[in-house]
Image (cartoon, rainbow, N blue to C red; front, top):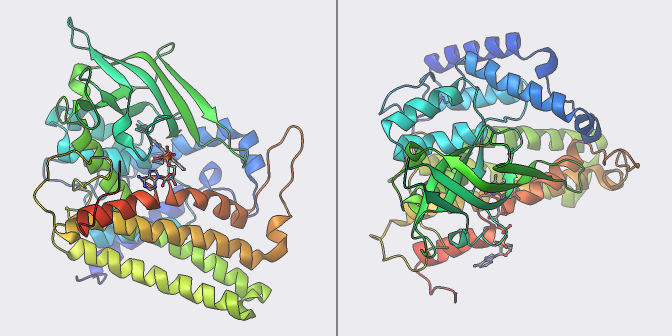
Length: 431
Ligand SMILES: Cc1cc2nc3c(=O)[nH]c(=O)nc-3n(C[C@H](O)[C@H](O)[C@H](O)COP(=O)(O)OP(=O)(O)OC[C@H]3O[C@@H](n4cnc5c(N)ncnc54)[C@H](O)[C@@H]3O)c2cc1C
């Protein structure tokens, strides 16, 4: 694959850099490495408001939805080649711009609507995502349906009069549910249906007092990034069912393929920056002279290169979806499906291989970061007082939060099952 930056890309880089220099100021600058989660937690509302405002700022500049497939039209996003998307990610990371509150809408829902939505749904939902005005959360997991997503029990019953769906059930681990305006919900629309049959993919507004309740789940870190969401007869418009009634499983799996793999090349730019920071600290403190640590740093650096080549191979290979366009992936949770035409190993395994590579790599980076810090990582500045949560520095935050990387979007065990059963055609595990 030709992945050289051309003159057009360098012009794009200048534009991106100039925009970030002008707009990433004041309240949009993110906490420094030494800032603490406690400080952030005490101003959680202000932080969320600033993050929301930053999404609008990005949208106003046309920087949301760069990779969206333009086959069906444009939705306020600017066109950008893959290399330009990489350039934008590089500049974004270089500028130290904040983590994105809008990534679920931009990177997960939008490609799914482009692939499975109808024109009215695309016209209604994509422009506000591109403007940074509407935020989304993902309503998949339930207390008894995580890895085994086909166990979803949330129901959506259609009103025989006006066709409105009434959604009832509980979701869990819903990231950014408090900030989100909308949730895409996997729900059972066929009464008595089992497993992956009879599910639908519904777009549900979150602002429904008495019908949608969000309860934050506070973690050991003191922060609460994810939530429980209770739907009690929540209303969803009949036109806001994506992909057709009963086709929710296909749509949901297509979205998971994007979450697991497609965007990894861009994601690796942030990874490279984090690794650079750890290496710099190891050099400054002398930790890099310790032979075992030195080996681990080199190993980590090498594996990042391998991930990059793997991502490029996937992007240039057979079965690669257009930028931002998802490819349905097989799921370990759908053992009773009639056998689909056999996908090539390339098609079927790519998102799972990518997820295994980046999830494990990032978790090991977190471990390495605290090892480089040495004993200090276990001590300062962590502290606990009655009224304040833990305070953590950058290495500690990376260590704790990266534990989740091998779980969300499908755990490592599930990715291995998919590769074993659907790609290598090894015997299925007992279910
Ligand atoms: C940071 C974070 C953010 C998240 N955000 C969201 C979100 O926004 N929306 C959402 O819907 N969900 C979200 N999730 C939930 C996530 O998708 C689930 O945690 C994940 O699918 C695993 O499900 P579970 O937690 O129920 O664990 P379980 O499914 O109960 O699994 C427990 C353990 O058993 C293993 N296991 C399960 N089945 C098998 C098997 N067949 N073979 C071998 N091992 C198996 C798993 O790998 C895991 O180690 C988030 C999770 C995290 C950590």
